Length: 151
Image (cartoon, rainbow, N blue to C red; front, side, top):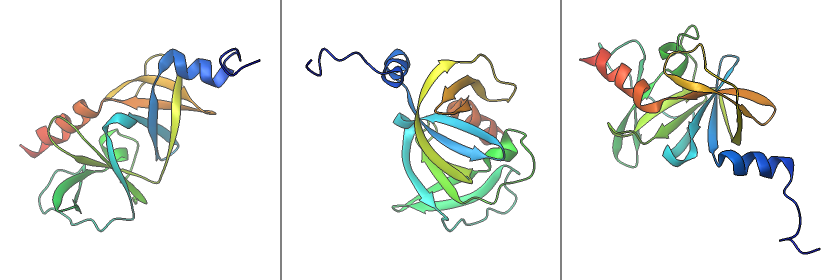
């Protein structure tokens, strides 16, 4: 049997059905998913400069290759509790420019079956991601919410 004749595995079928790979961000007990296509870079323990009088969800800014990037506390903006002590910052492209989201850990997984809506704000739904359930974030809505708080 040639590779072309080999039937796809369950993982391959799930990935082919959705075609979505995501970066998963750990925030408290939740996994949050953002499309890999919008991920610029993941920074481990970056030096974050605080911004005086910024909105509560704005942790500060980081320098990414000479570009100043705002960093949003993912847990705080989603109502998941107290601010995170970020181990990593995922820098994403948005319609308003790059933005960093805090997390305690990250991993990449294909998104599988749709599990319906999420109770979290700024989310488009929930999907299976490996052995876990991930809340899929609406990056543009999240950025707009924080930007609106700055105005």
